[in-house]
Length: 85
Figure 1 (cartoon, rainbow, N blue to C red):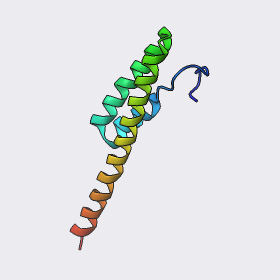
Figure 2 (figure 1 turned 180 degrees about the horizontal axis):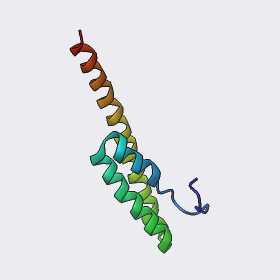
Figure 3 (figure 1 turned 60 degrees about the vertical axis):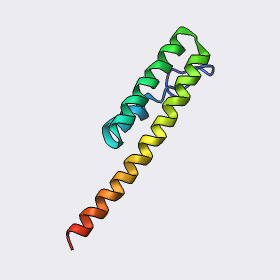
Figure 4 (figure 1 turned 180 degrees about the vertical axis):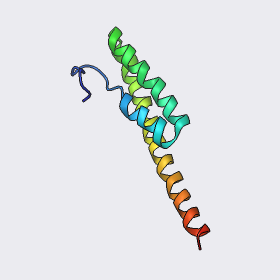
């Protein structure tokens, strides 16, 4: 649970979204960042259904961004290793 979050609020995954934007797959990271902000705003307004929906979408986008980032990193390392031989 993130700091300042009560038990009835949906997690925003904002930190994870920023990390994915900077380090992994920026297009999916930006989309996750947008949904993270939507989840935070919905939590602030007390709209729990909208917050849960945005939170779920942010989580899925973050997982995809992380997986794509790892795949791209593996491909990059494999290409570097093969080009040095």
